[in-house]
Length: 253
Image (cartoon, rainbow, N blue to C red; front, side):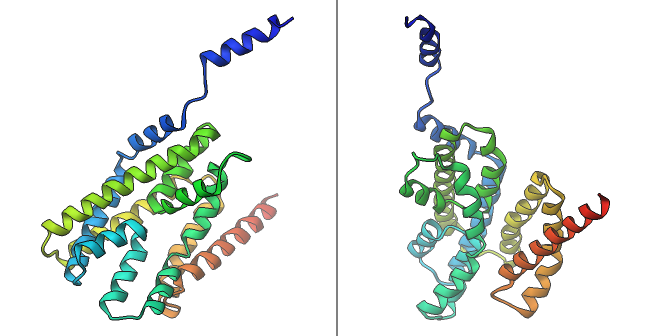
């Protein structure tokens, strides 16, 4: 009576589901990549900036580990060096980090297993959401089993964060001073990689149109609405791209 069920049981035993630690290890191995080295180079530039502005090694590493997103760290460093109060500095960092909200909202449903994933697990994963990890995840996670996506992303994020954390400390100790041009060039590597990766991974014309609109509108909003430039650039540029592509589709049809 049970013979028809035996092949399925045997097949399941021969191909058991892979443990979460296996996926975390794969994520850690995947962190050894060009994007991670580009991010590390950017934090090397930040280490020179932090030392020049008078931050201690502890303060530099604390911001690297807890804040993590480099633009927000640079904003916080500038606020501290200028003597800004805690509340204005917090607001400035929050505005610089607004861009991470839609990125997190897009990624969490991708890694969540309905009915199984705990909220605290998503909170841990959300800490690693930044340009490098987000682009890598959105490109590679859809091709993985849903059960392996979250541990893979956590393994990737933890490995990148740990390596960058250590290299930032080493750079702080070894780099006494860094020319502003060199530090700026290292900072620029991350957004250049971000733009190139998004353009290559874009599957819809609306995605590319939004990037072009953002490149055109970004300098305008930076000039006239500093502090809210990223928010308004994304909102207006994305809206224009969406409406423009819809109108073009209707016109062609």
